[in-house]
Length: 202
Image (cartoon, rainbow, N blue to C red; front, side, top):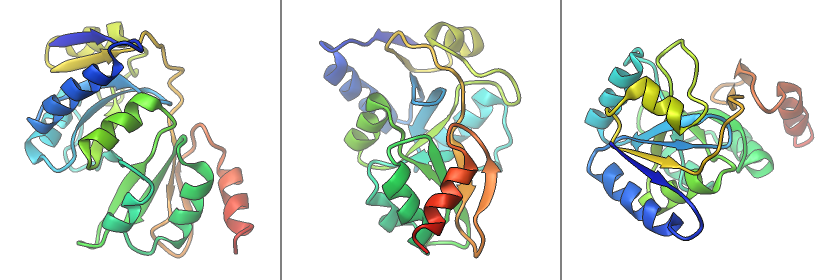
């Protein structure tokens, strides 16, 4: 495990190193706009299984994707009318959306955080990254890099430490895959505000 202390001087170099680790199937930890998280290549099934093993979470439970851009919705999703409205109004930000995929009859969770590091990583990687809270399933989420080390030890390939401590308020998760908009988890953005935004476009 390696810990990189981030500042304005080494930010770009650190991102390049992190992207190389992600491309090789590695796991990294970093802060986001909501909580400290773990990230890996979403298309690498071995890396995804490793994250589930690290968190001791149910491997059948889907993990959120950090998209490289708003436009990436078009590549992976369908029935995106509501998703596009919410993305336009709340992205980048603390909103996660469950959308139906093009390829299979399944739903995936997607987000675009309001966080320079998270978004730069996904953009430079060029494809969706898994983004999930840095904790053991059902237990407290790491607030900072030191907490990540205490929870996972040397099982993570890289920790990007900007010195921040998160408030650990998760993103609001909303299902927009069906006829009705459903709240899955209320977090940083009130569900009422989301419904108001959608009703103003109806």
